[in-house]
Image (cartoon, rainbow, N blue to C red; front, side, top):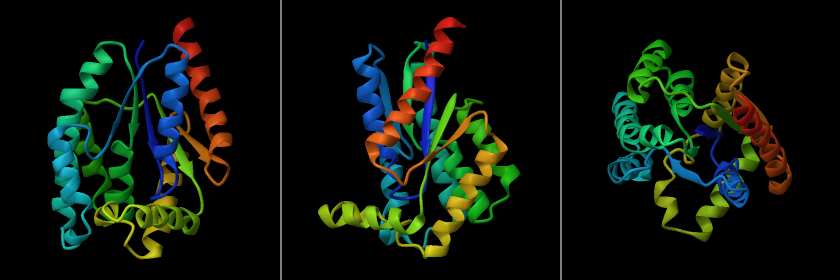
Amino acid sequence: MSLFISFEGIEGCGKTTQVGLLNSYLTSRGYPCLVTREPGGTKIGDQIRAILLRSENSDLTLKAELFLYMASRVQHVETVILPALSQGNLILCDRFSDSTAVYQGLVQGIDFTLIEEMNRIATDGIIPDITLLIDCPVEGSLQRAWKRYEQNAQDADHARFERKEIDFHHRVRKGYLALARKEPGRIKVIDGDRDPLVIHGEISTLVSARLEERVKG
């Protein structure tokens, strides 16, 4: 029984924490998961990730950025996601194609229709069954992100997006919410301005219900 779940949100929203909590919850109930991420998820994808997120690469052009994301996605889909889905696995993915639609399209102005077509090709038409959008105020999210970097200085080398102006992050949040309004059946907005365990409780209930539907269906 395959189920593809993606997590989205602004920097520091806590989605990576929720991926880990959901993985533990599902595994304990007999649903082992493949946990992956974008950009990355493969050896080649992780090398592309390093280019995309390094603070020193602030002069990366928008088109170059877009093509790097798509290259990572193609490798990820063809070598990890498609095989996992064909084997009936559950997939938990920290970011997927919606990130590109928001960051490069809605926020940075690359033609949205072009991005949709590139995503269709890069994903082989695969769309997550559920996308959990962890939504929370920008200022608090960035504070959490930078606190994490203070604890691990090496990670701060990969903070190219966190270093952007505050207005950029507000536009990202608005972009995600606009996408959620467009696809309410797939994209579920989760209030991320709460205790992580409370958030996890809501997510686990939602995912459990979808799994029960799959079993019955």
